[in-house]
Image (spheres, rainbow, N blue to C red):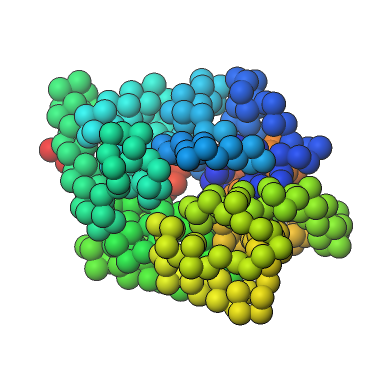
Length: 409
């Protein structure tokens, strides 16, 4: 009996490729219209996805005089977008990103309780601690709290929100799920331990099947050590994709999209990914490794290893940035036919590399439409993807207990 595949859609901006918004199948003007989100919501539900995930960014992209005009990454309020999508869908889950560092437990609890009731039990919370240092000044702080402290604050905030939901459910009658489904994406040791303690779905990067197996095994061990059931946690790595009638055509299509990215766009994207402004450096000059390591808030050892080889061979900054966009955000990028993608997804799940995928189309909405029209029927015919939703709540769709144990009075 094949294992079921869970599908999530991470729909940030115009797509996962930094140059995707320039593709003819993209609709960059649509992201400011209700019609666009209604269409996307219905499309995801047609594909019988578990959920739509929207990210959020609290920092100012134009800080210190920068104008990242090359990147089409609008960050509209995800709660407003998901609420709009809820009004035109009936089953697909609605996963919103809110920070435990800059939202109070009361504010979080109120927003999610409202969404869960109004959507009939489809709310999910992507719990983040906020890592970008340019966020702090927007909230009257000089700098972010230290990383381990942010995770301690997160645990406290989640616990306080749970207490509020328990009180509300007792006083007003339970909301459809009692509380939102908890989602987390921690990659560091602190992040993985935090995810193991609370998450019901975990978003991660897994460029290869071997890395997926290693991550899932590690997280299942941590979940068990935290006294929780590993089978009640879904591991959902990111997957970007380029589809065409043949593998060669998909590779050519991928190259054509990448060719839409000039060096300036690539350097902007690299700056965004490393949290380090590189736009003032000569594209023909060396990679400014020392500057990057002194400025980034991300794990310096990991970034140092990634930069070591290209810097050693003297790869210019512009060339490095142009190559970086080929593996957006370090996720798996698939190029091939619909049947090849379906087979790959089944192979990964059967091998224990994941429980499903968080799909990140290269451009929107065209590539998502191709996936729903061509890949979904293959997965359904193979018996690994539902043809109908099993219930009305996100928790039912994910195959989780309808009433979470932590909501007991």
